[in-house]
Image 1: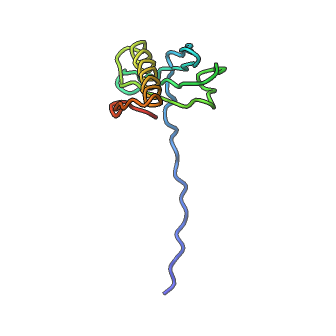
Image 2: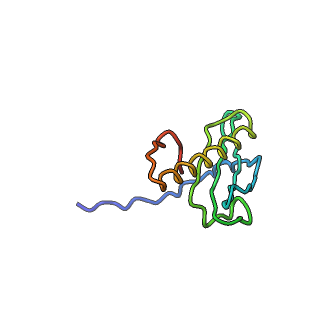
Image 3: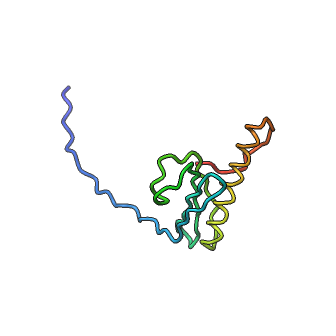
Length: 113
């Protein structure tokens, strides 16, 4: 029995909303740089992201050599989200440095992207 070919129907793709970035910062941290930004999410909350770079990036978006990326939990205030993301990145760096020195530390509570 021969099957009839089904007619292809293109689906309409609705673009997702572009996230609104409310804060961007590049801050030195010792010999490294932290490139951080905050994105507005559903419910009026804000999530901060921080990337650790070995050299100063041109912008928070152009970080090809970033080797750690951390996120904050959703926060009511954008500045708070930024501070949480920077603190998480600094703590992750401290854990990596301690691990390199032979100390054993657990870091399973942190969000690494």
